[in-house]
Image (tube, rainbow, N blue to C red):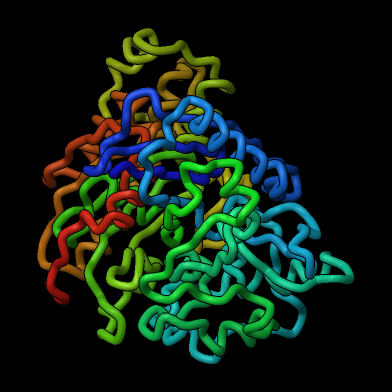
Length: 448
């Protein structure tokens, strides 16, 4: 059996074929870049229709090369926290709002949950611009007439390809409106967002499988009767793809953004472990939860610094960084150039530098920014470890980690004395989604 894995990311769409052990098949990869439209107002949006076209192009490329022959299962990893308003025909009424967008604000007179702490324990989220509780009423005000449904990126693109595309519990948890124990939309969250159940997607039950619409079954005959599994949030999929699917292992992933996360087994109906005040919690699937913290600064910060500071590339950059000791940089940095992820509320442009002098070099500024991210991760990992038995082993992953050896060393220093290792696999999200879809993750007893 081979598996087609689709990775719906913020900066690219990828399709790749993996073998029956979820190992990528050499050469069986198609990729299309997508561009987030950003603005000074804090806007960060995607063209949903163009995104669908990019995904179809990827599958077309794999089909033309014969890579879809023998595929028996389709798995999907997708960015979390997106939303797009649709009309009754499923046509977008505006651009798709991504997790990077800092514009949403609560409507006047709305005060949020009656008991914020209970709401956080129940949904794993906060009343915050990042989540649908704030995004939906803000979008409704600008969507105009004809609004029928709010949905996320994976539901929109899969809705075009499949006969039905309900929202997975993993994707629903990223909206901040799912009761994580009941595995159903939270009534209070719906009320705060000002929506009915008819205006949000139905939820996929355990065991749900999708099928291609007839027109796409004809277009891709190798996939005509192949089942599609529910989309997994990209952060959860990345944890699984790096082997961090038990609470003894934490994943620090640095792609476009950065995050630190722990996965624990919590099946339907089981009580949720207590959730510390400053971290979030989502669902991996019906059997597992993921608890963590995320940051708007990651590979995007790395790319901005390289361009703005006109840093040398490759080995020349490593040589420039070699004299700088990780964790002891003279330049101190607040790396929140893109603002805060929840529960913080700092807007885009909150980054800051200190400790500069006329002798400060671009490499020293770069090192200070990278160290700043490491410090945030170390602080939040300690909070996560307070929920499990003892310190964790840490696995570093993501494209930015693979590209920057000095940053990897800085993480090792910041996270000491924990064991820290690096997994150099740019497709951890797709691999994780495939492992989950194929049932290749061993079950762990609840409470382990």
